[in-house]
Image 1 (cartoon, rainbow, N blue to C red):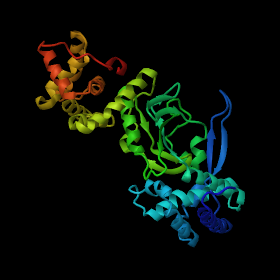
Image 2: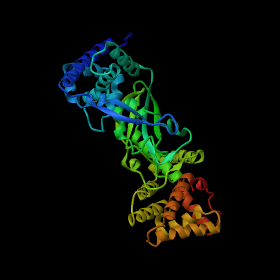
Image 3: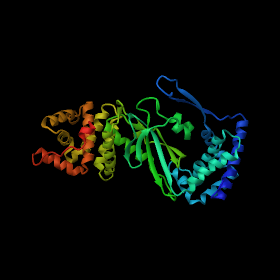
Length: 418
């Protein structure tokens, strides 16, 4: 094979040979490689499910990380890799999560995955030059390529879709392919939500994809970006959307790591799953673009946080969270009563509709447990406020509408969010 970095080829081959020796000794001593038992849906309605035994080679290798890292050949390989600027993204990908040193990061993100790749390609712990050459060729293409493609995927629950839907550039919802996660992470079956891959609202992935420069020293903040997408979907679809509990990272289709999804995005709210159509997907995309405004508007950020926390709270805490959300959103210095009246004007196009919205929100103003319709009204108010963009200007225009100085602000997305 044509090798672009002979020094890396030699050092990584020596490490893999030493690693295979250690693994083979453990297998010989009776420490067999475990298997995952996976169920796959049948080829059609009424057909029996298919089952597959998949060896958990990566878990077996990871369990011996400390011993493998102590090998002399591992230290030499890490030293060679540390001289490669292109390896920086691997070394920094996990720094700050569990705090490993640069050498440990290189071990866990390059050496151990490469060893696992070779073992999987060879079907076990019997050494194969051909299996190593194939695994190394793929690694070298990734390390020394002109660009890199980073991807993170997380299981998505609470929604079903008919087709792939784009939420932003490089951020989408799509159906999970059969065995897709297990192909790169054999242990994935134990990390998925219950019923994932079998129930209608548990068939999709939330995927983030970014192109990185060859000298990129870090990877995107996938947990943060996916959490924002979940918030936008919850606002747009009024569905019990959640992602995770973990996300799976790849770099040029090579496994890079597994990270937890932020808890508020990974927790499943109560409610009925729904189908996400193109209209609500467009609304979610618009809201996702506008969520960044909360960084410069503390009251808006407070409203968003409080509303989302209300999805997981029981009474009386649920209603208290909704009161705080509405006050932060539209109350300003005037308090909750003013916020309820402004919300009614914002959401109702006619006098009758405004009266109905006010009736839904009065329980919040009186300090009583709020009906579910009040929570939905707060959600719609958050949607409309995000859509209008300038929250202080929106409040001023609502006050002008109340005293008849000008017409009420036109609603942007309330119909789509209902």
